[in-house]
Amino acid sequence: METVGRFAPSPSGQMHLGNLLCALLAWLSVRSQGGRYILRIEDLDTGRCRPAYARQLEEDLRWLGLDWDEGGSLGGPHAPYEQSRRTGLYDAALDELRRRGLVYPCFCTRAQLHAASAPHREDGLTVYPGTCRRLTPEEIARRTASGRAPALRLRVPEEVISFTDCHMGPVREDLPSECGDFLLRRSDGLYAYQLAVVVDDAAMGVTEVVRGADLLSSTPRQLLLYRLLDLRPPVFRHFPLLLDSGGRRLSKRDGALGLEALRQRYAPAEIVGKLAFLAGQNPGGRARTPAELIASFDWDRVPKTDIRLPEGLF
Ligand code: GLU
Image (cartoon, rainbow, N blue to C red):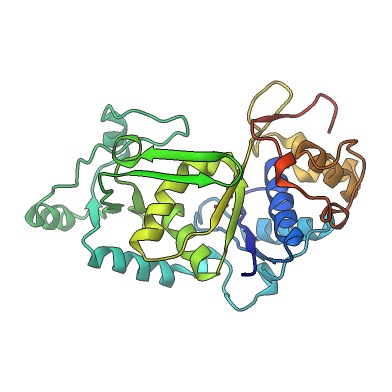
């Protein structure tokens, strides 16, 4: 079976080292297996995403020497590739879950969610205490009539989800206690990442998901959705997070490590060579094009624990 991988950035700012590493690793993994690479624009959060950032990131990928077979402005058999234009597919998936009695409206406000003394997880997720799970049809009708649009949540079964990440190893999560009934659609009508990513990866025939370990804890929720929607899940390979030389997580706010600043200082092959070095693929860290790295690419050499940027590398 052909490997189909993807890079699925959110165009909410310029690319930073973490995104670049993701794009490169996903590309190398696919290209070393002779597979297809898809570029999907995850622009559901219309408040934060901008078409100009999406155009820029395509330009940046090309500048770095990363190509793709479908997606972005290239189009292809699974168009459209912008999530903001795929809501019909999410509507259909939601209807399917509804039909199975797995969706309920949630009228909780942000303040109420915060006040409910639910434990907060390391990744910032608040475990939903199930406040609206047992609302009667009369209560739902009354609250809907009072004008508050509800969010929609998935009725999470009493179940532990376990799977093996192909890079990070075994993962298990007790969904009810560690996550709770999670959002499928926000009260403002925006679909949740968890639902959209599952629907899209399945619809686009993605067989391999490569992404940062910050999304490892989302994977059990996604695997549950794959099952509930009768979809075939891909293989997952999460890679460790990049930390700055002080040991802090890199973020879009680190302007100096954003691609705009890096492009002023380095040639594309220099950036790729340094990223490949961080990913265990290019011991000396010298300039390399992505294509030069394909033949020797090996997941076994990609670190499994957080990668701290050596002082002075960039
Ligand atoms: N759109 C997500 C991000 O920008 C990535 C989603 C994924 O790879 O599953 O971080």
